[in-house]
Image (tube, rainbow over all chains, first blue to last red; front, side, top):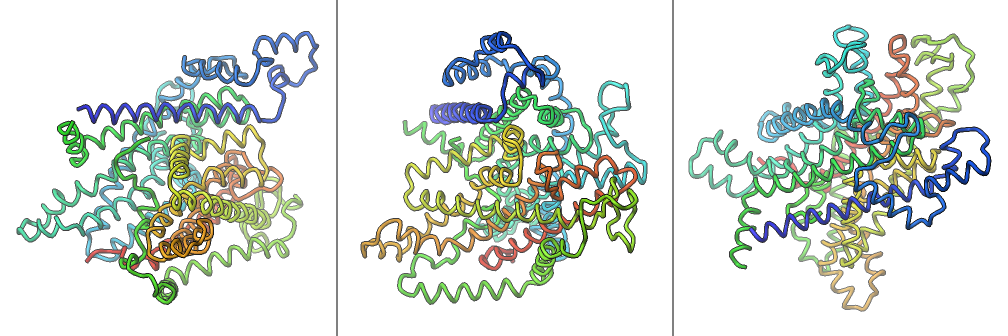
Length: 325
Length: 313
């Protein structure tokens, strides 16, 4: 148990350090960004020196760099991400209002891409039909090479505009609250596409590797039925790398929401981010970036914990260490 | 993060971290001869693939169209035609919402996308060789730093960082190239590092050390040349990813407004999806074909270099 505590303690600490590094980079980017923060704040109008001095004092712009940096870090850790220039709403509130919508398409995309990726990858690896393996592998490369926002546009043109089966934009009919499931279909497919391709490729090669291991030969030579060897011996072993890949893919899916939500006018965090960039609402831009970073860090920690649970070697390592100590 | 498990990267998945030949450790004197023979075998196996004969010409044609085509297609900015004409014999790709010939715009857009893709790859290759080489050859501080930086870009996805940076620093082609290069080099560097670590243990590096050659000299003339094959595969893949990320950025309206790339054309096409499907179809198709060609050629190179990584029978 002690080895385990040390392992996860170290993991938490290094995640925290990584988070501070990300914050520092974002802070420095904001520092070196061209443009006058005061003029940005009041807009494109002339201001009196007295008013300027007032703004400088109110925002602490006259303080030295390191002092502002520490104040900024302190604010982030207290959950204060500042206020939007545009609407004056607290940034955290803006983000939390949108986060649910993003998860509503990100989670299904994650589940679909992972399960389908495992199934297709496993089929491609074990089939003796060359065309099936070739077809899945070629499909994966193709899907891997498509810009997914363009795929989304094509889906809209075909299924929404030409065939009229599905709505084009938004998350529900105008004036209606909540999420209409018909509005989710195309965004979820678009979001899942790249990850599906990636996971299929990983699963295929990891399954091929797993099938080539000695213990598979042992199982076969014991006379076990080939289906049992495949599902009980080869698959669990091939799934181990998928745990890590799936965990990290959550970050890519969330980052990709920026593009997917723009295509479908889906009012989630990604769209908030893009709107904020276009309005130069820097507090919101930074807020979303920070929020995404935290989410991805948490996902990585969860991945690590899951891995510790499912990998018997790792479990054994922990107990062995504990025994030695 | 201090992870105990092996982290499968796309590179690992492609088998790039595998040693190139199983007897790599035993060769000392015969290295020049066998290295050359292996290279030739790899070339032959690369050129024997059908996919290479489809996609190598395809990418050459697309590059030619983008860089020679502008002399033939006319002016991409003069809005002198009727608006939103569908593709016809007169305007092969139709006209856009302002009445500009879309073929000309797509051809010019290709220049920007391809320049960005290849420049980013060169930048990543340079940074990757220097930093990955030092990390793999010397280990220690450089090695730790590289691992940490890779983790950083895993936590703050490149697309997000690129968006923030482009939003704050402004965006022209050069800034975009630098931002993408800075966010994407760790992928190449990780492979250089793995290769450098492998090669550093080999006999001929040992004998070079024993002969008294300096570290940088061994790194430059023994380690890096032998690390090149898998590194070039990774660099090839980087071209595709850079084009994809650049197209995403320009699609979101963050790109060089004076030089619209394929992604920027898709940005303007979004508003006209109802009336003009061709505006959305063609630039995206070009991105897709270039990235597909690059990825398939990368896969083929990789297969040719690792004949053992294939199907187990």
